[in-house]
Amino acid sequence: MKYKYICGRLGKEILRIRKVKNLSQDDLAVDCNIDRSYLAEVEEGKANPSLKILCKISEGLNIQLYQLFVNL
Picture 1 (cartoon, rainbow, N blue to C red):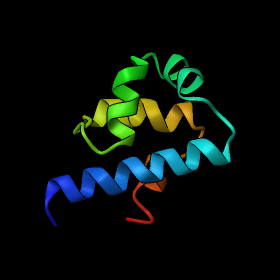
Picture 2: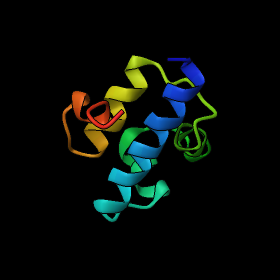
Picture 3: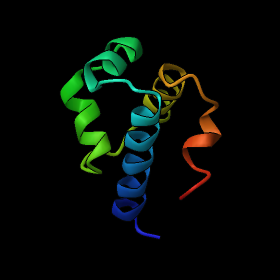
Picture 4: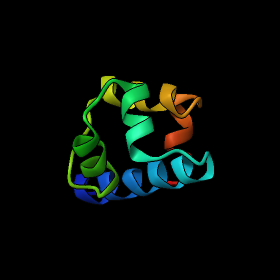
């Protein structure tokens, strides 16, 4: 798989989980201590987040890291 495809799918999964948990981008970004515009880029598949950022996002979503990858 190409990394752009994976980043796109990962971003969609983060967006899906965030909406299920009824969180705004602003709320999640604050919880994760990351910039909201960067979170938007991750959700749009435009950014290639580091493992550290993915850990922050999973903690902000209150899920285990592996759950971001289950549906890829």
